[in-house]
Length: 111
Image 1 (cartoon, one colour):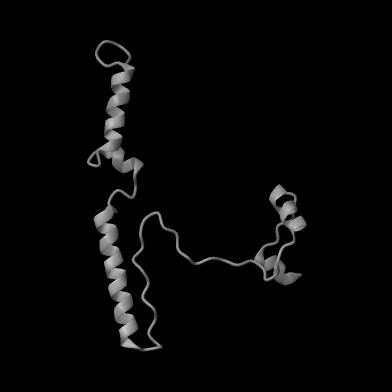
Image 2 (tube, one colour):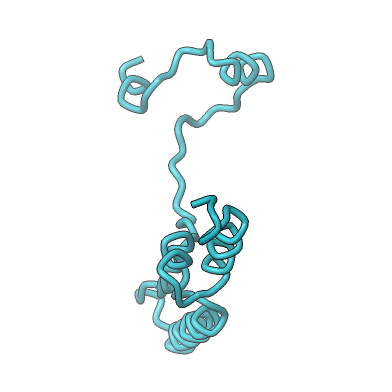
């Protein structure tokens, strides 16, 4: 390293090239979603649309709505709601400053 056989610049160029070539192990490690290129994304979209259309045309209200194919890097739309009240600006400022007391859902039921 850093000698006449392989300079630091040559190593930098080599590693940069490995990051761009999708067939290298370095690319695959740095891009865990590498298998989901445009073709796979479009195919998953087609499958989701077809499933939704079939569900809609079936007309059965008791049938569960089809879930889309899970895609890497996309979080689910399910969220957790803590509490049912609106937070005031002062409470939000206190919470964002880190000075607020954190109430867990189980502790909130005990209050």
